[in-house]
Length: 148
Image (spheres, rainbow, N blue to C red):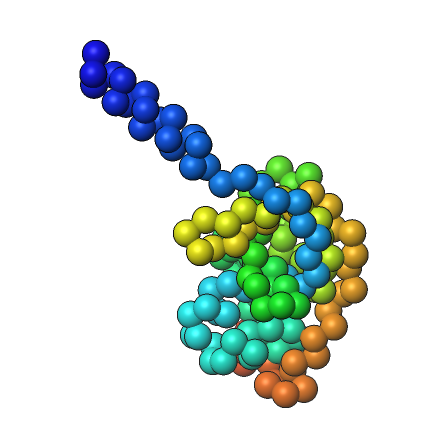
């Protein structure tokens, strides 16, 4: 009986410790989290905007989590966007790559990581970060060769 009571207490404590959602509105660039955090493509600035757009699309299509880099520098991992039937993946997130979005949703923070479940994209300014002027197109091999 004590074992059952101990398990019940542990489960109750786990539920009590679950993160509560905070409603937020955030503006930022939909970005490729792998290249941004790993440094595989160089400085973080080179993994944003038009310089990295092709790679960001490929990474999102391949299942790399898409983030929203807020104006204050916070990266929100997008768990779901609007009525998409998939969590962090699918065509909806691929088409947001490099775009400046304003979104409302539920913010969760756990183990030092910020997450957002986007309920609605209330603004889409398109791709506004013209970083290719400073960095070229990274990675260079992402540009298809023209057919002859």
